[in-house]
Length: 248
Image (cartoon, rainbow, N blue to C red):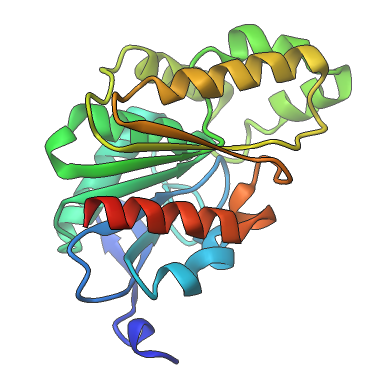
């Protein structure tokens, strides 16, 4: 085990009636912490593809949202607003002080957008990895093939319900832009589950995400799918390093 991993903390924290599982590790002298929010239904192990390299230069905080992985579950809603509240309490109770670079994949993108919108003074930067967009269910999902549409809507039983996911989209739709917070939008360019029409909307939505900040950049990883950090970990590590050098 190298030096940056010796400082690792893996534990559960009670945030008030529910325990959330998290790991804090990496470069202990880093003056910002990179906070990772996973895609829908994914636990913290989905960051295994990048954790070793990123922890060499940054401090990493990864966690399981309520009802995912080793975290508990209660009757609180599982939409983005509640996820943000849970994460912020978890960070505070774990002694992880801002500023944060928030990294959100897919559904995690909605969560970190809302976090940065509500607490911009705590956020040094935002990275959206093939993030959801607030209008995808209105315009994009109906254009999927019947098979993909069935798979897409059928997933909403592993974490948030479809209604809670829709609430999350409404919450980010109502949120403020990110001002001049540094923003990297990373998009996977190879997603064969799309039809040509749904893909047109997805690329349009990704371009709209770039406009959330006046200090933004769009990175398209042509040979990666939706799970960019798994398909092309090198490209995501490069983007994380670029952000870290910008904000440190």
